[in-house]
Length: 470
Image (tube, rainbow, N blue to C red; front, side):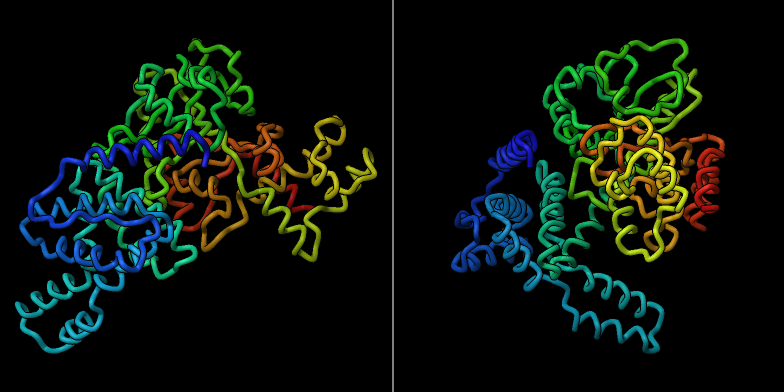
């Protein structure tokens, strides 16, 4: 966790505690104070507070006060304490499976229609874990929705070593999916006049191309740049997912150029292309909750309305899994992924093998070696993006899957497009243009989702044809 991330996280916890400070009730009983590890002798007071909260003892006001107290106590826990907290909820307030089974068995008997409906309603209620009532009470608190998002983030992390927590994590995901439906979200443009606290979050949350300085951020928010984000009304200061856009006059093939702060910051008459060059999700607790699927479509509509001269919408995207896939393929496949022609071409310029050149990673220093490596790696990147699948029809590369499922076309593989350490490690500096052709988005989306068919340009198709011939 970076210093910026820690600072933002600590500020959020402080804001939550401050928001809940005034929530109290004369009926809420003795104050709940827990140590970070949640010791054994502290479980009974916690158990009593949870039970009282679920039973609404003292009425809704007291239940709300107890929920705030339980939330404040949770924020003081470390991972070990949080695991014990969730385990108590699961062990004592989960679904009564035996009771639900008996009710379900009644549905197989010959019941009158009214009795059947009542039995179904009773079963539905019995299948809802009681601990969800507590989560709903958290949601009703000031900043409670953010609290629950962060709580699921904890669960996602903790369940890796404690798989029994998967059930409560799944239940919370379902709740968040309904609360964060796209219909509840607001799309907003963020510019340099935004509050400093929000601008700081853009720096902290940027996940693709690190923001190096405030000057760098200023350039990304210049006249010929845009930043759009989705916000939830209950979390107005927290961008949920945001995208950076560059307005240029052609399809961009190099992110270093886009990020160069010495480049022009004015919109030119010839600028007819919008390049989406980075998309970042900010909330770990919303993993798997669909937000980005609609972001590019909404932003495209906004840009077309604001700037009618824009007629081309494309990404300049990383290929995060390519280097890992290539390394695994080289190690595991009996037949080499590199052809005899590949090896012969490289041998004209160096005595090193393809594998050794890749491991050394300094091919840019020699123009001829670089050209040979380009002819070898670019077709393999095209193959990886369009032919390698995870499960079913889904593309193996996560970024490719995101854009293909949104209806994009694989337009071009760009050589030496990202010379950062991250670009070198992930994809040997290659990036992809995924083109969003307004006229074909829906058809591309349907073909990919239904059949796994991937739309490609003639240029990319040519790369695949050459690879197949080898």
